[in-house]
Length: 95
Image 1 (spheres, rainbow, N blue to C red):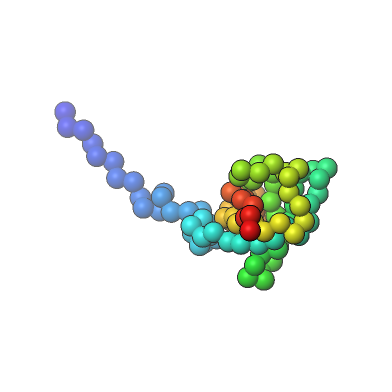
Image 2: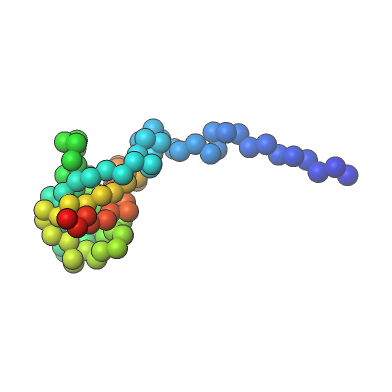
């Protein structure tokens, strides 16, 4: 008996939103604007002047939350979450 070849719809492979399509592949730069130490999250002021972006300590890469300081320059990618866009793969840029 011949095997059926199942073709998947291309839509299954596309991102869930235009934000993911535009930002998953783009590294953005910004500055740590605010840290909420008791809850381990903060906000990044984006270099291009767009709205500040939320980040959680789980989105950090190569640095611990306690090592961050307001004013640190960072690079990151954007991701959609249940509550809106957030920064992930956040890396501190050492000058």
